[in-house]
Image (cartoon, rainbow, N blue to C red; front, side):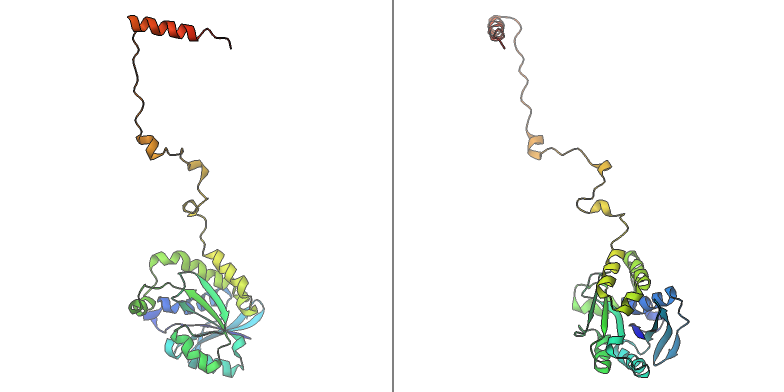
Length: 248
């Protein structure tokens, strides 16, 4: 059995917050794989089902982020699960929006959810970090993560959540590199922005090469009008008639 934990805060007030992307991911897995409705237990909302033929528990702690470990420990203890049987999905401000990193073990990186989980079950669980971007200053971090996703962010958020749900079996199997590859592909776009990428311009829309601004600014040589009558005209006529008589 594998336990997949999504971190977030309970209640409608926080439902669409960046801090709740873990809840969103677990909900997407539950919908995609036909899990029964979540039920209240172990200080959280829990559902049991199958992913890729394996028995899986989905957990959304309802203790608020700072006490997430209380719920995770209660489930792990009841089902006799070790850290290797647990994967935690959460928001990461030090990753660009839509970027994903997965690792086993390590520090909490200042994330209060992990800070609560680590001392209660150990640090050897899988950490699935979903980038939500950094606001640019530490004083803005709290309002940023407790703010709702902007409408424009749906362009990467929806494909990311869908890809997590589609490839949840990789979480259970521990195929971390394969999962990161799948998620990266899902958030790269459908090609609509390809014309903006170097080397991918539409050949049917290529323009003629631009002239150098130096060349364009250079004045054209003046057009000299040659005399048609008079001594100068006679001299020029003799000169050109003489030059044109050479053999080729």
